[in-house]
Image (cartoon, one colour):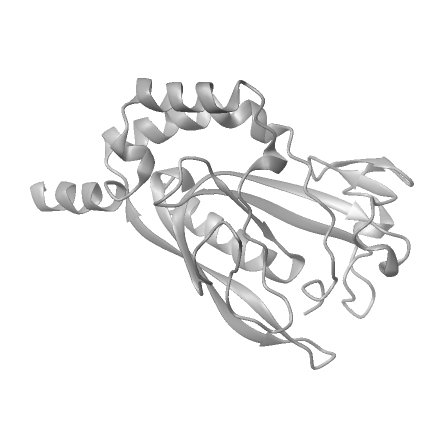
Length: 235
């Protein structure tokens, strides 16, 4: 048992948030953010396009094929554009909670025809994505990763797998890898593959829980920017 504890501690010790006490962390967030944290101000790690298999962002020194971190929150959303050429602009209908749309047509997403697959398994016109808020080793604030439609099955399978083992997702380290896939139009795209890492110790899990509670109100208001391309929408 001592060896297992040492292993879990080795995982969290490399994280910036683990090197600060709860009071110090709260002070840093309070003094630097002035209670004005907007989710859109958070570091982001855009999902790769153009067949690239690397996450790339100005927030990081170099592209990464794998992201390792602790998912502190996940949030589904839906958006509908009547014309795919309008991507990058506000949608006609948007569901910040992934359940109830506002706009045209609006209403219950579960019964909306635009959220259903077509007769030949065509992707719904309404795009579903998942925002992952991930703590990575070198940052105090979570990084936002928007999981596109083509990787939602992989994400869902991963979180269901954790639940089946009695594991809470924010009490375990998560690896997000990228692998090459090709859709029906013969276009290559990156697909996310999720793997569980090592579990956190009870002490470290309590620290993450405290951190989640302090930042959750801001993350709940997150409305993601519209995607610039529909490349990652169709398998």
